[in-house]
Image (cartoon, rainbow, N blue to C red; front, side):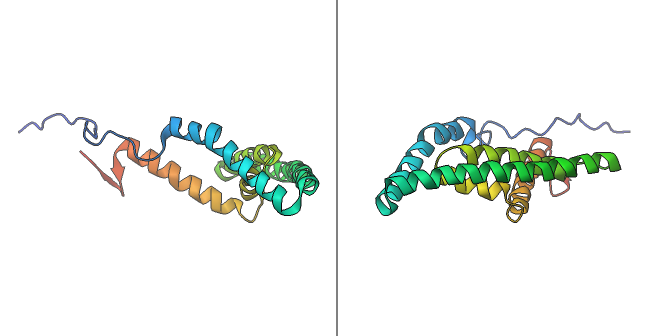
Length: 156
């Protein structure tokens, strides 16, 4: 019998080891430096169009609406999670919904129009499946990239 050489785990090698995309520190830079500038620009723009007091009133109204919506959708997500666990099924969808409601609620409570829009997109039950699907595809790509499997074929 001929012996096959031992198989090494898949390695991208030095030429392709650079990550594509923003990365963790790029994301932190966007969150801490770019987002406040975008929010201030949006607030100034809204203040020029509708005035100072209506802008402040709108920010307060959005925060109150965000708190109410987060409470309502959070209780729905919590109830769905408990039902899934009591039925003995894997609560992946329910956990994702709960996480999206939590992050969306935090964005809604943050003052600013851009974060409010992002928070509404994450919290509303109409748009949450879009975000859930997007998040699931990212997680699948990350998992497949780490295991070295591409469309059911293992790379050498």
